[in-house]
Figure 1 (cartoon, rainbow, N blue to C red):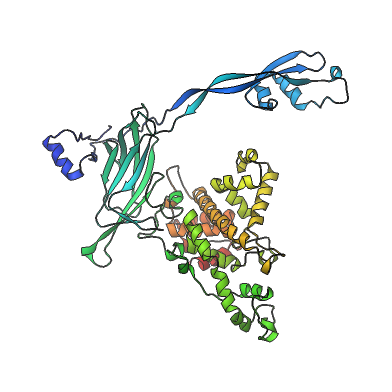
Figure 2 (cartoon, rainbow, N blue to C red):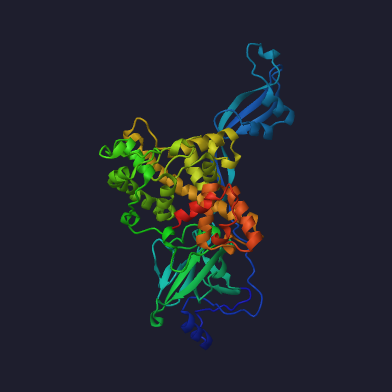
Length: 547
């Protein structure tokens, strides 16, 4: 250990006995160090070689005119060697000639220029392959706390202990100890630590931790941010504690969506209502008399407005008040038919259900086709720019969606490295996948397509969340140790994300830069007066969704 005191629970000296009462047997030594900090470990070092059997194919590269062998290439796959394998095994002049030469057809082979390949033999062989073994890890949990579903917040009757448990995945090896720094204080313990928490400010305290293994290496250095806040609900004698943990190693209920990305805690006790997820679909019910949705239901014959003057239409080609009233029952049923799916998507992706529903209401009034002949499509009105954001900033979504359109080999390059034509094809396919307009379907809408699109829009919002974090760091004074959460609150960061979704990263970047330069702070109220004229509609857009 570096800079701390290590307690051996197997010894029964009076000092250890007293500390064991205070901290609990087998927990840890977590005492202020005289000075210094725990040194970072070297990290995992688990590369080993294994012998594997394979089929070796030996090819010769020879000249057409003289049948002279110029190089030999051994590969472990069917088919001719790839260009890369030719480059590795042959002279560069051979490689470039082979790459650029025309086919030898319609001419005697002896008169052809360049080279040809032919298979010499096939045999079983063995080779050494480097394999990276799984490294040790450390996982975080809490003792004696109840997790609140959907908020990521843990409610405790007393200030809890944070448990760090080392994990060694290799048989016959074990965790020697866990070390780290919490709020500047070093600690060390056996394979399981119990850190006594204390009340913190709204930013919480930082934690860095790692494990040492009998294998001879360590885990990587993990990090966490831990916030402990009190709430007495008006009764000081019934105080409770809200504990939030942001870390990749957290085993409890996942924190509020994007909190990890921004390194920003939601408000104590959970996010605001518009960023929440109810426990059942009924919590998403709404009965707003949408004009555009009423018009589509009248046009499709779902609503009979024949009892209204002009069959429910006003002089400006919108639905009249009589038409809206005639359509009200159908409009209410239509806007709530997606509630269960929105809730399931929220559980699958973490995107708040009420945010998704509010966004669909604002974008399309729940009519999932092309909105008023614009290029925007679907419940959330996706554009090609929006599709580009989803594919670029949400790699896990890209890896799932791309093979539906392109070959797995092409997709493996990653979206930024695809040819422009392939990127365009993916963007157009994604926009098409959320467009539920279907002339030959009942009501002109493919409901299954609309249902599929709900998940696409959730993943697009997660991509916007990631891009928003980078836009903020690009436009305010920052360093490698700072995050978006250092500059803005959790709720405001979601509002900035909606600006990114609606108006794009350019509008958000300009607003962030102008706001920070003028105000030296980054809040939604401050930003609202710093949009350019072109980007100004984003203000009402965000305010409508976050009501």
